[in-house]
Image: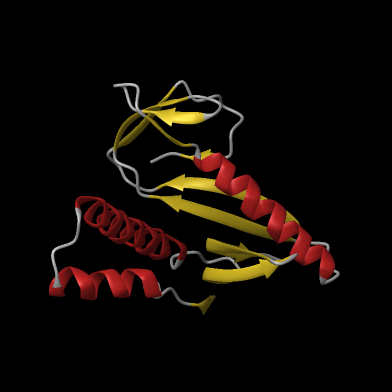
Length: 162
């Protein structure tokens, strides 16, 4: 059951307005397009979770705080004893897995999304513990774009590939 729907972030809404009213710099345009693409990927994932027929709560786009540290969760499903956390990525193209970075075949490094997932899971664990919850937390990165390939991926990582 959908309990919290997704909406565009304030940042994305602001960038849409600015993009219509002025010429964004190259970096601003790149950031804006990444925000749009990320939101599109999250909406695609929402369409999949809407089809679930399990008895669970679906919470999208949560902005939370734990130990004076704020964090954002793309999608979460809460079952009777399990809290499933999903970080949705709408990456496109070919990448190579490296323990520190994801690399393009040309060798350009991008931040490893597993770092973000670890931080989100830790912050969520701390928050739930402070509230007295004993839910088990499962955390995954979902690569939603069918035109995404990740090479040299160890099988034990919490990645859901297209």
